[in-house]
Each structure stands twice: as C-alpha cells, then as structure tokens.
Length: 464
Image (cartoon, rainbow, N blue to C red; front, side, top):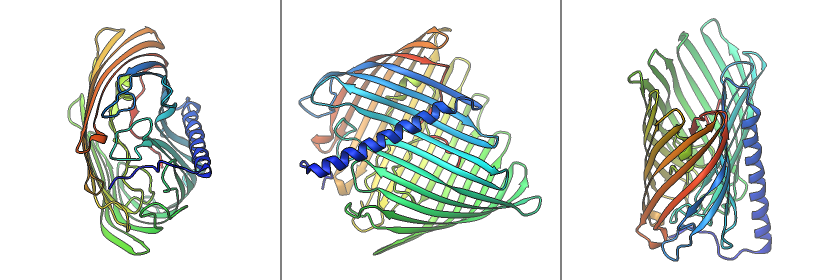
C-alpha cells in the first residue's frame, strides 16, 4: 500500500495547506535570522551563497525526464556560545531554489536548528527555548523531489529550576511546551512535559545521577493513521564524564508509552561516546533506543561536513513513515580527521522505526553511509570528493530502495571573504517499484560571501 497526497483537493483544503506552508516558511526565516543575530558568540561563521545548477532530471522521475536550470540563494551559518548568562547555539543550511521550468514552482530546502538558555537567576532559574526546521519526504515510495517535499517545524520553550543540595549535589526541575507542525500531513501536535533530575558530582568532570520524565502528546487532528494521543514516562540513570581524550554522555533506564488502545514498554538508552583516537582523528559511538515524545522527524545524522560546497548535496534523509507513537533505535559510528591541509569525515548509521499506535507503520529500517574529503591544493584553491549510500526498507509500504550519490567540488578564494565554488554530482536510485527509481546528473557554480569556513551539521547542537 502506498501513501501519497490526494490528487484532488477542495478550495478550503488548498487554502488551509497554503496557510500552513506560509506559516512554516515564515518560521523558517525567523529561525534562520536568529542564526545571524547571534554573531557575537564564541564561535560564529556564515556563508551567503548564490548561483545555480543544471539537472538533467529535475523532477527525479523514472521516465520522461525534464532537464532544467535551478537558481539557488542560500544561507549557511553556525553560532555557538556555551558560557555566560545567555548561552546558545544555532545552525542554518537553508536555500531557496527556483526551477526555470513552468512545470515546477520554487521551494525552500534545508535544515535549521537553534537553542538558547537564559539565566533569570544565575545558577537557580533559567528559561530555555529551541526551534528547528527540516524537510522530509511525504511519500517514502518516491525520492525527494519538487512534488514530494514536506516541511516540519518545531518550536519549544519552558523553565528550568535548579537547587544546590550541598557542595556536590544538584536537583533540577524542567518544564517544556513543544509545538510541531507538518506542512502536508495531519500530524501537528502539542507536547507538554516535565523532567526531574538529581545529579552528584564525583569530580569537576564526572557526574552521575537519576532522572524521571513525563510527557503528554496530543494531536490537533486525528485524521492521519495512528494519530492517537499518548503519554510517555521514563526513569533512568545519568552519567556525564569528560576526560583528556574521551567524553561520555549516557542515559540508561526504562520507558513506557500508553494511549487509547495501545501501550508499550522497554529499555531506554541514549548513549554517545566520543574519543580522540590520534592527534588528528576523533571517533564517536552513538546508540539511542527510545519512544520519541515529540512526533517530529528523525533527527538527521550529526555528520559534520567540513566541505561546505558539498553540504547541500550530501544525502542525509530525515524522513519518517509515521509521526504516530513509535519506538526508534539509532546506531551510529562516526570518524573525523582534521589535518593542516586535509579534512575527512565518515558516518555510518542505522535507524529502525517501529509503529506502536494502531494504524501506524509496523516497521521501517533505514541505513546510511556518508563520507566527505576536502584538501587545500594551494593557499587559495581547494578540492574535495563526497558521497553517500542510503538503503530504505518499509515492507508495509512496499519500499525497498537503494540510493547512491557521489560528486566532486572545486573552489577558489578570490578575496578573504569571497570565493567561487563548483560542484558536480551523480545520483542513482533503484527501487523495487519503478516509481521510485531515477538517475540524475547535476553540475553548478556558486558565488560565496562569508567570513570563513562554517562547520555544518545535519542537526544543531541544541543547548537544552
């Protein structure tokens, strides 16, 4: 069975859809603007890009391919301020693309994330806020294409109260309200939750503790399959440790979700271990098994792209089959090499999505391997290669697709803050259904204004 948008919409439905898309676009612009507003952070970078590419299959179809030029205007930016009364981090990799063909209309593509903590009473009471925007596929049977895009916007805020219990212990109570909006499907939702943590400091860099959470998730509409309100409860042990070469951030415990006609429980684990393997190479091990409290999209890979020219073309898919109650497991392994003239990254990740609510997807498995290598050929010229292999399987939807993409980049620095970059890419997707298969060749050139390299990531490192 395939999931796709209805071919015919009433006038009211079209107006409602247009209003939702407009609201999400404005939210994306506001989030993106916040990235540039925090320019005085400890770390900051931005790149304004304008240019164009030519695609020999702009609609990404299996037959009747249409070739066209695409004009692109984008903002890539990153800001981070981890200390002080106001702490924040933000990421923007957003572009507006206009296809020079009357069959297709322009659209916004990319990922934005921002988070901030503000101390109202230092070390005692703070206010938290976060926001994200990302683009996913509506129909998993088809590739990401101009007519198969959906915007997901999430806005969240809430207070955190901290209480010192002696010299080595701290209690914190956090409240959160989160609103998630989908531009196409009826999975808009509100999440109201709370978290209580008790932490003990063994040393300045080693902390252990326990915590519990409770979240209520309610959907604005119950038309979509599986869109049933539910609650989630968690209990876990916390461990945060930072050594000379190793950093550990772990939550291990149990979790349960419950809604009308369903309930499920099981082990909970959110573990990230990062270690500097050599003076030039770092590695990360990631394992996450949980019931997402907010029905937003899969968090894209945290894969770092040190070659910004390739950032817009590396394939990382954040699509989900369903935003209903589900269990999600993520296993990842990442390596980063940074040398004076060469940087390289490799990310391997496998994600499993299991539907829990009646009517939700039974099972989806998604794997990705992404790499990027960039080398400074001279003081002004750099070149790079990038590629990805993606495997998507959802038997209930008849999805079994393999996506291979690779390309090269070449850039020259004209002045200290102005550069010209070129990109060539080849993509091939094969699917058990002819509808999802396609070939595409893309070549383009960009003019870039920026204050230096920007570290781009699939997701912002949200402070709270």
